[in-house]
Image (cartoon, rainbow, N blue to C red; front, side):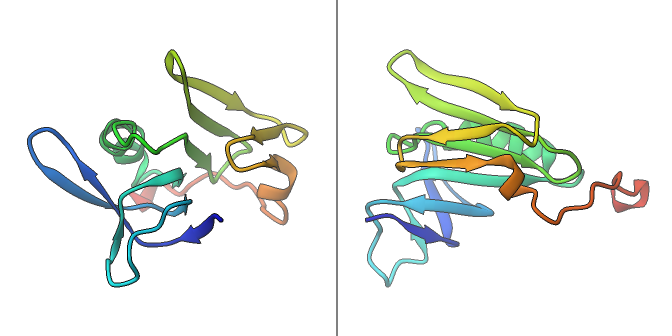
Length: 133
């Protein structure tokens, strides 16, 4: 059974270990409750903002894609209807982009579909303020 987790994700790289806070993750094989981190996420979600975009699209993405259990890395824009997926396939990760409120993100790895209309329900899109940097 899957469960939604808001704990740190431990990433064991060849030269060192890193811990990252994901905005959300789904873990099918959780660590013991005493751990403050998860080792085997199936899905990781990051919500992009001006402040987090560089890290989420770069450093975190590169680290997360090394996790053998990870099936999907999802980047969700907050200022427009756009979700970018990195999905594991037999050939490696492939990128998928969903940019319309009528789009539905298939997540067969979890047995669900995610309509963008639901993701962005009640969201009023406004440009980010320049002084948020």
